[in-house]
Length: 148
Length: 341
Image (cartoon, rainbow over all chains, first blue to last red; front, side):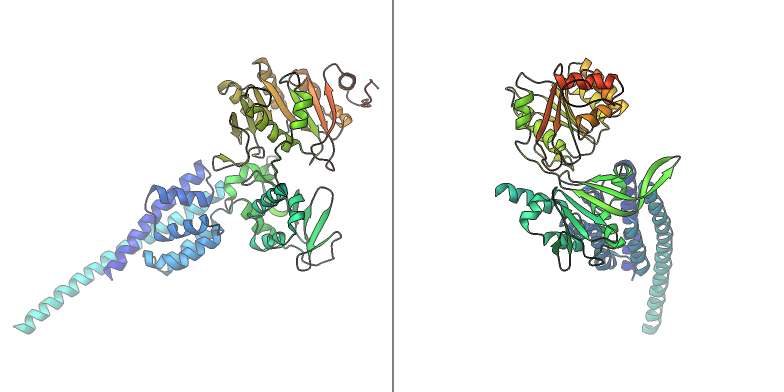
């Protein structure tokens, strides 16, 4: 369980990096989506869903279709929960559909959502890890008492 | 046959960006018609149509071609147009927002999609377009040899400035494209240093940094530059022998051309004008000719005969003098007969 919680935190942190790159590129270079994803994959290690989406786009799949397919298939294995996947789908639907100003607003909205999700995911991980620790110690003590 | 296959391939390249539904309808068009297609028209609540320059065909009733549209059959919806618009923008409207303001999008291969919808304005200026209601996708063609006749007729004495005038779809851009290829390839002897100011991306068809059209080995492409800035940039840093640009006419363009001429650069440019009479009526033409950049003017035939030379005017000839006389007297009394009206 702790592994799952940690991978969610890592996923959200990586998505924050993805978002920052997307935002900067759209604002200053206005690179089309398919090319932007390609740049991201060359620059660092984005989550699997971004890599899969880029592969589909390079094969000619329209971006909205490639994005929703990749999110549905790969978001969960990347560590996202149902709410994260929903946010990703909504963000993807807005990507590329407006001018730069509109894109910035969409990215800022998703940025705020990611911040809240990350905080909640970290708190959850801390809480659950403390609980696991307490449970472990209690179970250990109980075992010692039984043996004695 | 080879040309037909090449032209059909250009058609396929252009329609790749449209939605799967529209693409399937267009790919069902016979190859022979695909090769002749100049424009693809998409309009909300109207059937999909293609134009070959001479004929218009409506694609309806299980992808059959009709010269007269059938009422209410296979009309395109708002969603169809919207999806095609996003596809043309590569699902990245923001990366084409400047083009959209000007009413067109240039796609891979140099094909140009004119868009029409509701203008979004701010302080009296168009800042965007919403509710796109029609799209006119023009197929760019590279016809090697399209400029051969003009080169022979106009440059027999060496390179000189040239203004190509013609109606829409008369082949101005195709000729300019081939002229860049020929001049930079050495059709006048030595290869010339050619700078192409490609404001709308139609001449070279630059996509992700490389040109889709062959403009020769000695050609520098200033892609996306406003013409005036591109001309100045080329003069400052590329030391070209000749600068080519499409559809000139603004005050800024004329000023930049004037500066280029003073630096010893020749200019080859195109301008919209279906006849000499129309050319004479253009307000900016007088100033443009006063720059001395265009001692020769070629008037092309109409859209029925793209690329065909209708008339060549050389400084000092009868028609040229008549044009000058007309310009000096307000542009309203040009008769095009070789004498002043």
